[in-house]
Length: 283
Image (cartoon, rainbow, N blue to C red):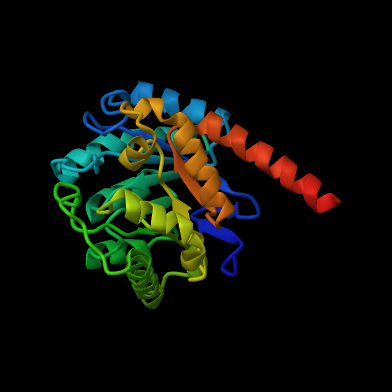
């Protein structure tokens, strides 16, 4: 990666010398894989602590389902879901990300102790840009075609990789112009967000083209529908092997961060790959 070797996220300087693992914590009743599992704050915090023990570098807390067809919730409802969980984890010294597309939620999350704002709408809202610029948080600029409720209704691109790269580059530059330091910004192609299986595969195959933009690349393919379409595994919770394979392939092709449900399995697989690569380099 030609970009920053450290991702600066509030009080954290995350070393990108090895791939980072971001654990997914959905405090929602309707997320596609774990909806309802962690709506209770104590259950959510317990799950996050377990992910940290399993090797997660960051916990990504989301209070609005962004699965295809999802109905939106108000920003006030979303903020109420995430703020207490974020505060509890931040008090324990965890690096916490908030997964949101609403400026109010991002602001409340940062006040509660979040160190990263993961915006699935790619900082297209000027108010979200203002919140970002007024903070020292790490930022994830993600690409999404449309909105969650409608994004999977016949998504079409002339060249999905070129169009996603153009969007991510434009939004990252806009953040820099607003006063955000370059080493705070990461980019995410938005696997499954307004994309078909072929679009997702093209983005994974051509990930080096996104890495060439000079920002750390985050990939979140975990348990998504396209893995089920490829493998024939219907239940999202049973797509662990496919998800780990997607994460390893993303890292092989340049991803600096992988966002996953199955932290322990992913950390174990990455450790094995790293050990083999180190042995190969030593020869």
